[in-house]
Image (cartoon, rainbow, N blue to C red; front, side, top):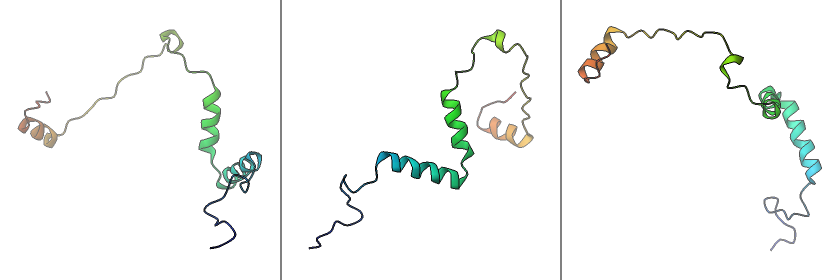
Length: 83
């Protein structure tokens, strides 16, 4: 048997400190240029958007949905009737 532990089985005394691991994670994020994670971290601490109508008084029009002839034939064959 080997007298030294394998690299896949480290004890807690052989691991880096939480401060060192945090620094490693920050370095990886910086080197990988992860702006999405930065945006997500900022959004996580921002207040939730309002649910009140008066905060969003504009009218948003729904877009029209076009049903092609082929889709209408398939729907009719399945008795879905997209009228």
